[in-house]
Length: 222
Length: 147
Image (tube, rainbow over all chains, first blue to last red):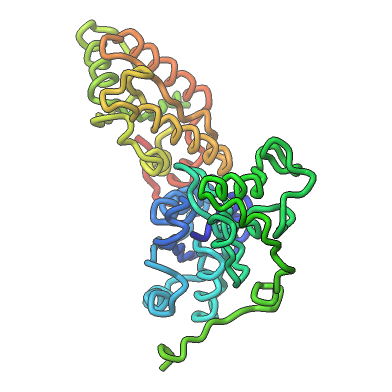
């Protein structure tokens, strides 16, 4: 999922200060799973903002809505009936959702309430870790299902580097050396000989390095 | 000038804290009438939003009382809510309400004295902290007297 974390309260408060009526929009997908911007978090943020402004002697009007997703126009359209009663939109979705709302409702200021972090997975309850960098040319089949692009600090394709120590990366003792993980996995799979296959320099053009990307499915476009 | 009477909300689990409150009553142990008890089946039923809404609606102090650690009737509801209480304490600090207005307590069903003492100490702490900072706005905008 796309992971995110709620922005510090003081930053959100500063951004909504000029507005009297806020439409606070959550998202039922990724940010719900990582407990950053789902229905529950919308409720908490609305209550927190309301109480903060009350301590300053003001009440603001906050309407809470959680869409199924904010990255599809059909769902974003559901906000249209509420737009007249809002001065600004505060979105708890990832950057994709915030932009889709801004694209559809061009005359309303749209503010982000979360910082979008990375594509990741749950390691265990309450812990999410980066897993995919969207390089556009997946090589997971060659590395035993563990990604060196996302998880190696240097994105090495023929790791590890000399900084790998007791299975940890030199940048921090809390970061696993992914090439150690890959080697262990290849051994478990009985595929150690694959380790010695040299991976040539990666064509990074398939990734963000080649510019903003688009996927067009001709069979689906109307 | 009237003395400020705090409004304190206590979420008490049915099996331990609420029964402790009952024990305090049976033993005629006095505790302040400022404490408003909300009985829940398990302290773990109390969600973060319940704590926030209690303050939003004018409570000056809130506490959650659950079973002793390791003794939750539903295994670990008390530890789950303790984490939520810690989270909301931080949030309350960030918005200017103050996390010290929210606490977590543990007690067993037989601890009538502990219930009474917690209720008294929490009420006095909240009394010294003063009214919920949101209240002046509530009063101004609604023109109502605060209970």
